[in-house]
Length: 79
Image 1: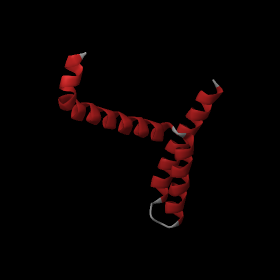
Image 2: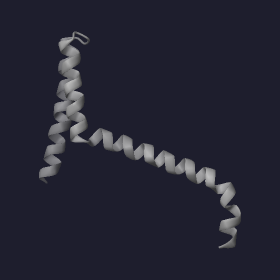
Image 3: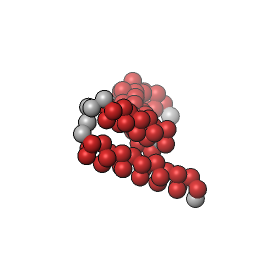
């Protein structure tokens, strides 16, 4: 127990970096599977297409991927 307190100043930076890394991973995972986030991406994609920033083929491909991801999440929620 005393050793834990003696080594704390040396271990704290490593522990802090591990905590920050875990927080980043948690946020990234949540962003990928969040239905609201996917819907926002779909809306942004539609806006980009309407403004002419992306071609129709690219729009259709990305739209299909997003719609399938949203459908998968909805199917998971039903189970």
